[in-house]
Amino acid sequence: MKFSIELKFHSPKDAAIELPIRYQKAFLYLFKTGLSHVDSELFAYLYKKNTPKLFCFAANFPNAKFFKNAIVLGERQNAYRQLSTDDVQMGLSFYNALIYLHKNGPWLFNKYVEVTFSAPVQVKEPVIVTDEIKVKTLSPLVVRQDKRLFLSGTKEADLENFNLVLKENMQSRFQDYYPKAVCALIEELTYTPINTRKTVIKSFDINVEATVGTFTLTADSTLLNIILKNGLGIRTGNFSGCLKIVD
Image (cartoon, rainbow, N blue to C red; front, side):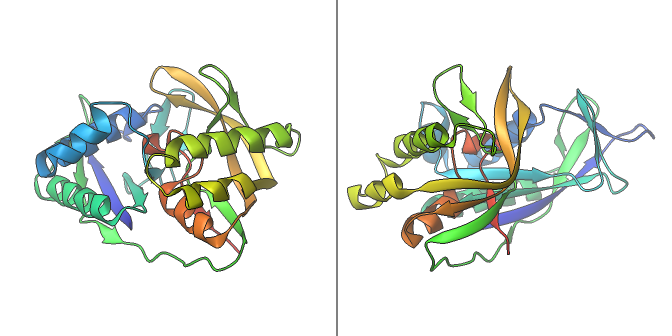
């Protein structure tokens, strides 16, 4: 299930609205607020312990300007957020959380800015029937080799090692949730860059090396459908790894 929502920002000041470049923390705080009110059991499962996140987030800021420490919103002072998961029951709880945020706003985003949420709109998802897809990142792809080393998947990178680590990351997310037959399909997963670049995202208190752009994924169509809904790589619950199929 995939949902899209529009966020409208408001400030008593006449100047253009600025958001911190580390916007993820505030977005997640509001999402957790909604989820804790509509499904406290799921909230505890996801956020009271170290649980693999089988969903992904993406944020888009139309016509915004990005600076080292801030995002200056465009003329409409809005943003869009997408949320996707392969788990229907979880998706329904997420939908209810977004409805809660929609009905009970405006919400304080930071000291000077309020935000209102539109009602969530379900996005139609493509059904993959081939063993290769071309995708574009809606949020940066994060692949972690160890606690301190993150990898980027550019043409200049060690792609053999990148693919190996990517598969390990996916196994760690899927192994306790999906059947062994599905997890076994990860061994044949192959990432091939087309037009990618390395980027650094500011995630909470650390800088994380990541990848943005277009690339192909080759695997069994069953696995590709799951990845498209849950996100690729790690930190998908923190605005990473959300993908879109492109021609």
